[in-house]
Length: 510
Image (cartoon, rainbow, N blue to C red; front, side, top):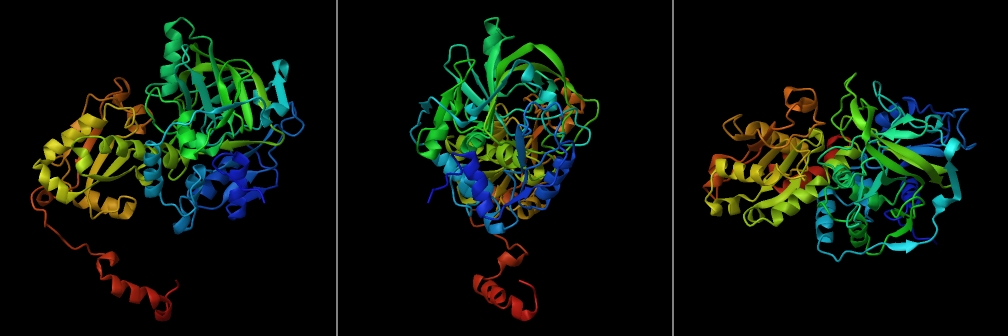
């Protein structure tokens, strides 16, 4: 019997979902123009199984008689079963389906202490089976989706991975950045600060080659690779080595056809060509992770020329349809920021004493970061709310790690920050607006946040960030200060167990 490795092989990931009854194969013809996106949104908002589109409407001009690829969505979204709600994320890194988010975060932190494992080079890959070049490349004829009403075009790239390398070859970056089909031979997409893809591109611009930056765009890569490529690991770190540490073995890679870039051998579909950051065209608008499409708000963005396409038989295009929580942009980009936020705290001489957990609540659209504070240790610091708020803001708001975060919220250790109901209850009852907040006006803003992109701060791209203290004043002074919360968990465990055991007997549905 073959052992499935869902973190290392994309098709094993899909088969794992099938075996766990978390996959629906849709054989009816589905139009990639909005219909597929609508199905994805309904499925993710109801936490239904993953939709796998096996019969996308075909464009007569498509060069491949099999339509080049099928499409699958919602690979990082939540399941309906509470005990397995983060199963799809757990499978990305080879953990059991029952692993909760706090343990996923701590697993990733533990991996940072492991020895990096460089990838291993192989000569062939399944995606070498089929090849398109020249006039056979017709991007507009591919079944790429228009995901939201109001999107500016077909966004073929929402869950693939860009691969770029600095000219000196010292840093190879794997990252997720959106890309839209511009014409039959070109893509366009965001290449902005503080993204690492921009920092790599800037190195090419420094030597006068900003118009010919080699790139690879790989779809259906090993799930561990797509997860790590969405994490804000430090600048200069090589994702492929970090993935090896997570998986406990080297990731097989194969040399690109047109450059020295290395591609995960277990990829479904691969584009190669050059990025030109000097030639800008209109991109967007697009319904991003905060849940809005603003008509007429396209951006001038660089062009990616697609010179060659390689792909497997019956290739599969993974897609993320971002919007209202919870989708991959929140679980991967937002949720896994938590690991790096916590890592920074654990390595800080003061915060390491008091920070217990960190999480970016999905319901806050990845704009907030919640920090759980050990109140008994807090008293020992002999600090004040003002001092603590300034410490957090000064440490985090200048970093790429917290670039997407606009509000840091501090709560006490009685709050489970992974339970939004409890967290938000603490937020609304334990801080006085303004009095318990410190605002940071000169730090970098996140330009995709709707209140920045459509507000006056878009000109400066600064500020709009705050640290909100939801610790009660006595929690800074009295180590024995306690109170009772008025909810079910405040009752004695024995009484809760008795009630739980008799719930059906009382006449309630379990």
